[in-house]
Length: 581
Image 1 (cartoon, one colour):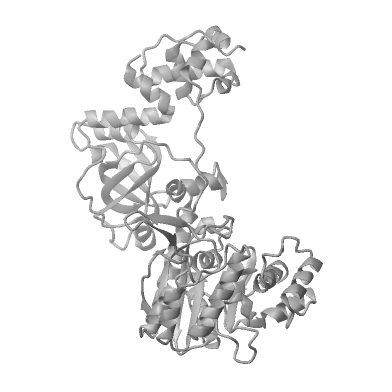
Image 2 (spheres, one colour; image 1 turned 135 degrees about the horizontal axis):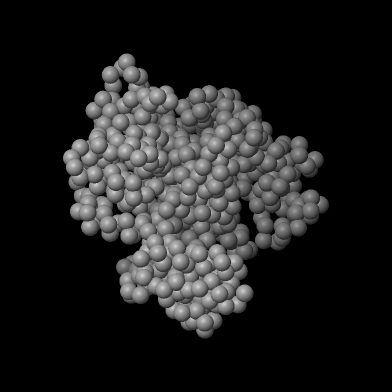
């Protein structure tokens, strides 16, 4: 057997080998399967299907490009289906029209035999309606634009029922490029995501607020309570942190004189992964001078109502089987009232030891001596309250121990002017009347340091430069942060955060463990046939032994013929003995 085929068969499936053979045949015919020149497109499937009528006279000299997704060959004429960025449209291809001269190779060889599902082609022609009433494109020229070497999953649909769906979540997220091609609704989610961001930016920009960019690599990971990722800067020989929030840098810009600034960017938290959390996530933070958290609540209501209308056409969206209304105003309740309402315990004025005892009474066994007062209150709220707020609800006036960057409440020094917006039982955004007293801020940072010394690995670092910035004076300011990924889940009805991220974080892909060819040879299988067996997908001898010998024999002989390996076919009884059947 030629070494070329031996190497290929050890690495590729049968369909991949066939496609590579077709690739070479295209080149042998003088057709470049990956042409360099621009291919000018003048129309797309969506606009043709929406606007064309036989009477309109539109789309009579057009070019389209996309993937070949179906093909029905019927002698001298065929139908195919082209998928572009906007949808799918039927093509009608006549041999004598794309091959007007004597040479019919383009139709008989290229279109019928060498093109595969998933290949990119360009066509020119005109729109028309078939006898069956389907708007189609009558093809006058056909151009190969890109040959695909791996077969796409074939998803079939009949009477609204999908068969052979590409639905395995791990495969979909790991191979998003395939997911986008074969699962029609996936692209719509990301189009809506783009609309959400476009609407948000427009909402902020129209009010005069400036979009800015702040460092991702930071010497101190401030602005939130979270475990950071650590990296190392070789030139400076210092450890740096991937930012966990943009807050402290944005407030430095308020000190510098901007009235309102916002940033939409990536944050990183070295914590768990689940359907609501990804270690790399997109967050929006906005800070506006001379405002307080009451103003920010009304601002947030207007923002979300505007986004929902832009994305869904109304103030309602459906998520997790529930109808969520973003019609302003939203419900408001204090955190301590929420806890009292759901548990019966009034935590107002309680000491740290008293709250720890209440945690034990509530069976929160994981709460230990490392938990400070604020973290224990947060645990109680998370366990008994958070999941109960389905419609948008502002949880307001958090205990001071939970909010080291927030201004004390104007009427109660034990509370802060803070709110979180809960939607479908999860936090969507977090906002403060920002703390601008540098002395108070420094004392709060020292409190966080004490928590860190007790073992709380999510406690904040002391940022001395930020305190210095506050000492130059920061005007009264309100700030708000919102998780963009979670917002996209709610607005699109996606059930997991992975469904709204193009490329979510995944565990390392498991490598396929293959038996060495010597294992097959030791079982009495000739090396050349062992390579064929592996090329058929039986990468372990045990896999081949689990198959009926008559089927494997037929597959081996078929592979030998299709790939012109010129091997002498084994007898069925030989295969039976090889497999010990």
